[in-house]
Amino acid sequence: MSALFLRQVLHRAVTEAAADYNGSTLQEAVVSYYSHHVFFCLNQREPGADRPSCANCNAQAMQEHAKKRVKQLGLAGAGKVRINKAGCLDRCEEGPVLVVYPEGVWYTYFDKTDIDEIIDSHLVRGEPVSRLMI
Ligand code: FES
Image 1 (tube, rainbow, N blue to C red):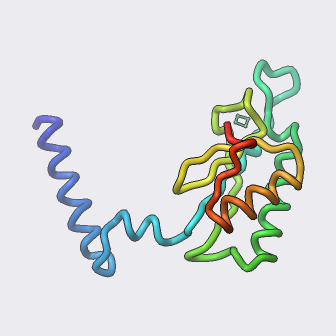
Image 2 (tube, rainbow, N blue to C red):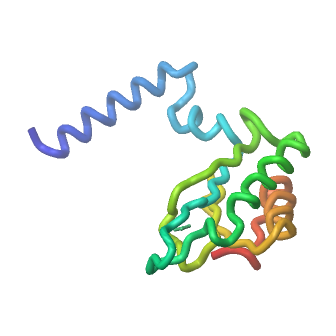
């Protein structure tokens, strides 16, 4: 069996499964569950590691702040925003990092002011914050 044939079979199976998903396409089903999905790297390396760790830059407190603020603003939940923890996103030297999907916009941040700006500008107004983008 060729790789092309297998890819065609897989494509057909996914397409048929998607068509069965409430009559929507798979992409619509996946994209529509959250308007934005935000992943904060909370990775912690051992002391003396040769790469930095986002956890050493207050990442957990910033993730918790974002989650709380999104909830306070009424932005949390299906069809809206989800704030998640993530392991290493492999941009350690640019950290601390977070990434916002579906746009795939990457940010670094320093404090709650930066997090609030990302929420207010990107998540609420749809305007990415260029000064924090990496
Ligand atoms: S430790 Fe955060 S991106 Fe690697």
